[in-house]
Length: 450
Image 1 (cartoon, rainbow, N blue to C red):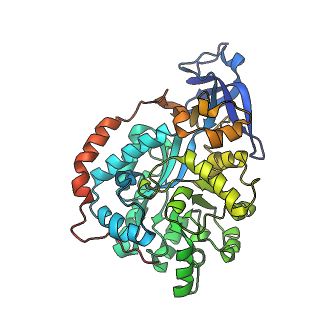
Image 2 (image 1 turned 90 degrees about the vertical axis):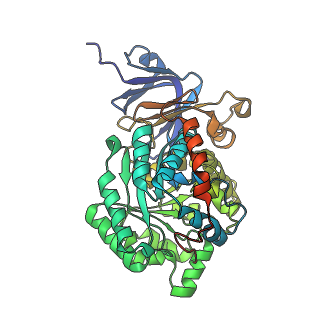
Image 3 (image 1 turned 90 degrees about the horizontal axis):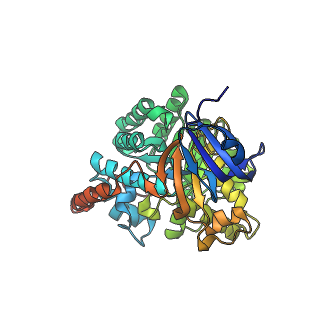
């Protein structure tokens, strides 16, 4: 009996694989068979040639990787790329970013999100975790352009109870939207902008509704030391006493996590993960970075992230992967940590686990959603290839991604975006810039003071 046609067959290619210990390997001269948006099998290219398919992609000479996950960003902030340069953190927030964000409209957020999704799709990102305002607009963009997203409506205690209520309402309304491509979280901003009462209420709501929490905490060492001086506890200890660590929580940055925090994270009742965005830490001249090795030793997944493009200037997770490996070598004084294979592990399955999707994405295997990218290593900057993992991490660039697929749907083919018209977005965003960037009103959405 002739099998029914597959929706998509990608062949021939080299496929990044994970074994039962989640170690990576590479299967050469392989093919990926996709049915109904799911990887049905990874087989030989010879066998795949005999199978009927509605669509085929010739991936000759290319490497198939699980789509990258941007574990913490503020996608619409691409509209502020380069607007607040060479400033300390407090001035960056108070003098530029938070005054400008007081001007944001839903349309600004929508256009920024659309431009951000275009950038991420072109860079091989198939899923992003976003923490921002007017998230209905972001959800609409995700639905339209075909990417996967983990979304949370951010709030401050200065907004009163309504901020927390809007975060919950958004999370419940959009959970499972876009055919399951959207998952949601409660999104208090941080312990220094959300008080203990609101954090405890958020933890209670998370448990009641089965929702995770996504927030900033111990972003840098100054925050941890200021919290200790003012309140006698670290930001991580605040998360413990308010019950946030009893939920499934994604902590953004954590470069201020102290040794005294590690036992609390290790004993957390919920699933705890940390997202690291190293480029921004370097740019702000923060003295420490996310303690990736210490968290690894505790079994806490560390996902790769970019933060918003206002601080990072790009949404390039490929760069985050290389920088994470290099900075870990420098800060630990050990060239054997992180290896290229470990960096690829962080970029794939660990990042998927960090956003609560480790059972759906992050590896190319039967039963996983078909979120796949194809990478071309024929350029002069990637040749010759002696160690494929090292070439991918330290030589390849996001621009080497040729094709991006989410749920079996091709969103970019041979570098051509198929679901977003970038020129139209850029033109309208440019027209809106004068009103968005006006700071003469003297308003801020919040004050930054750790």
